[in-house]
Image (cartoon, rainbow, N blue to C red; front, side, top):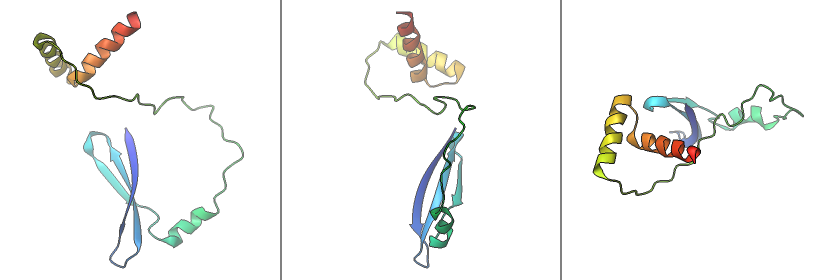
Length: 109
């Protein structure tokens, strides 16, 4: 998964330096300087969009990530221990297993 974020800082000469920060999966980060001054931005000033784009090869919802809501849930010790043990065996967070289990049960209803 690749996420990007645009940030900026001021250089020693007082000019605004833009930085695109790309966060790669597993905590790795890759940075690249982008549009460090007005001259670099000029090439994008006259950018014209096409009248029509072809999205026939696109995948709907490819980057959709359902919103997770943090909540407090009181469960019995044995249930938590079961999911934590199974999570360590499968090397996934135990909350993910609980969520998957609940989702499967909801689909069965």
